[in-house]
Length: 268
Image (cartoon, rainbow, N blue to C red):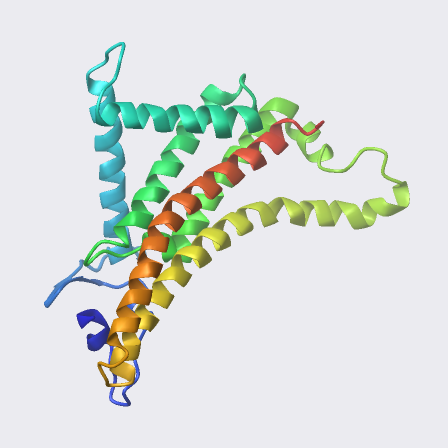
């Protein structure tokens, strides 16, 4: 609520975007920590809040996987057992059905890393003073490009460079449809990463907008009468956002596996 109050402007409105967009200051309650501004060859390389959140998510990813593989045993226990169950779930329910058992060892590390990284970024935005890096289109676009490159590498490796792009055109297509289908299929190739980027970005942004909007009603209307309803509804959306964080990590990983599988097995 304090954060929403800080967003009040002179007209009694609330600046919702300031709580969602990236920032060059790390806000820890009343403490505002300016982040370094860097520029390399005219390119802005400044450290931002979302970048810090991604560093924290990456550190969590490294510590999680290192801690679970440091002590190897026949029967894992505790946290290692939960991580192993997650790995088996992604391998058996996502990667193998969509990519195939033969190519699973090649793509499982990437898909597992993407799942845990996205999940960590999603959940970091729900903790106090945190920010959601996956609510930044630049972050989701980069993740989608990584999936796109994995799709291209898998398809070209399995079918050959020419064979992969020829396989994009449906077999048995009449010659007169070729001028229409070739550009459509080429554009369709790029709609896959676009869908991945926009889906994750939109879903993670929407939940935070709703939460901030509900809490902001207290300050916009300038009355405590709506406070109980605002807090209750915001809490409900917050709990839903926890579920959405897991779902969106799962959906991104699943769709990436589906697209990679479609690139490898063009004959299906």
